[in-house]
Length: 182
Figure 1 (cartoon, one colour):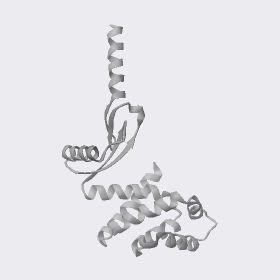
Figure 2 (cartoon, helix red, strand yellow):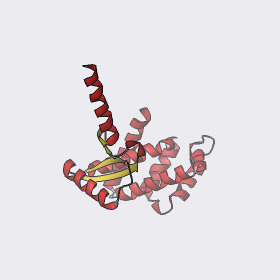
Figure 3 (cartoon, one colour):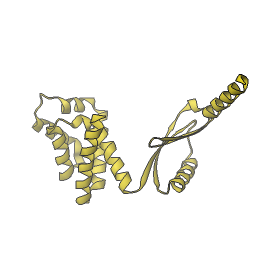
């Protein structure tokens, strides 16, 4: 919880600075890329959180990992994370930054679990319905969860809409148990 609060403050500060310099998209792409690189290469993450390696060496590593995403603002931000020993918060900061971008652009992040892979037509149809229902653009991620048997579970923030066969069968089972008890 404490890490989330700290990460949110860093993300909000970066978002404000990026907005003022019209570099939101560049910072967003940079966060995505550096997070991807650090997740893919565990050795980089270990070096960046190692207290015995100098901040200057870590900053060189960050600079080389950034490649085309190295804007002065974003590089200063990452260097600050290295200096303050907060680099391990990077994935949470990236998530919080994305939330700030979504809020500013009136985009709802929706996670969908489906019993089977969805076709592109099904995805577009569901996304269109969600956009109409939510009165905002939707950034939708879809995952397959065979345990659902059929249907979908839609998660938006802390709300969940469960339209799965598994839930319907459970509801039916609960109804039969109540009727048996009476």
